Length: 116
Image (tube, rainbow, N blue to C red; front, side, top):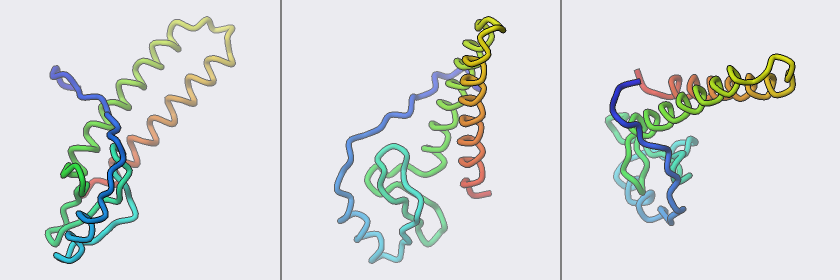
């Protein structure tokens, strides 16, 4: 991770993006099955094959970068908890490890979703 401060994933209030989505579709954009993790609206792909969130205007690269950095930071927090958990507390260790594994899956999914 870089030294710059990483922005937290901030969920925004759900908005009615139907007009924006309709306008983009009329201009030849494609509505995807994937959704924005910030506002939960469907992602849109333009004719140049760039993917964006219609209401926020964020590219998937911007959103994925923010989500990935936040997930990695949370993984580190859980790893720190695990390091300070007594070895005899096996149940807590298993929960922490399961959380780290779930975070790793999220990052892998984001990496697969990113265009080459």
